Image (cartoon, rainbow, N blue to C red; front, side):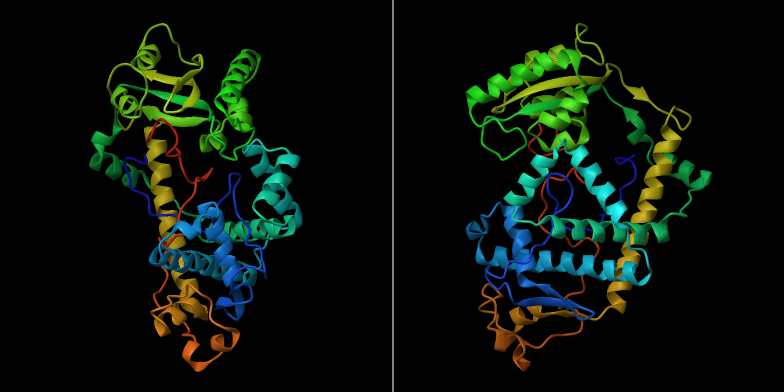
Length: 397
């Protein structure tokens, strides 16, 4: 139904790591570490918080960004941090904070989804310069915001009439074309800091052959979560449904396409390792559709698809309204934006001296220079829950 009813953009709450979220760690030694970028009801958001997110999103290569690009990224990241803080404070005021047990359960679930052991989790924290305490605090904020949103969206209901109107307005979107649904396990010979990472062509070949042998007595989804070197691993390797033309456009070899659509490969089976686009793949065939199907409102699953899509759309709209109201009621001081306006030649690329932050020239407005919108977001990274398919995956939806 995602193709049928366009969903509103979700609120960006934080930059995401491979297993769910990123904590903003205070680093006084970083550029501007002691500078306040903004305040929300008096609570500061540090310039180092902004820099930490940008560093993680760019892999530490922000020096390769243009000055204007870096300034824009800082505004966008700060905007998302302001939104998150506003919603978290509202959740706190409405007594919707999660318990310590809920936070622990959430983190455990995220590690399991990413196929991470405790050792790998600690290694990831170290690589991203995060403390476990800061990570837990970020998880607490995310869960609190989810509880806040659920408070206002849980009672959303969709009528039969709405479902019928949505179907009648989008009948062509319910025509199922010829194609295959796939899951993948990927091994990349380049050093990409992925889990169980192969770092050379030789290591990649050994690893993919080992995985292929393991699959004879193991679950494909579990192996994909634990060993695949692609963001699709958080979705059990699932990369969605694709037509023959889509597969061709994404570099699939003709012999592989013929195998997937041919009679010798049945649903539930998987291919031998195949190399293309510079990586090794094993594909599992989850569904095969050789003829076009015109589904009706009474076809299995159609009503549920439409209902869930409409409910999600309405919930997103309510979340947007909740954010706008929360922003309106909060006292927001955006020092970074104010500093840019007061010193256009600098654009905030160098943090102001401490005395300048408190001077009238660097004074703050009580709202951001531009009111944040729900769609405002930090530069995106591959995410387990937000992206259906990584751009690195051979199939793009």
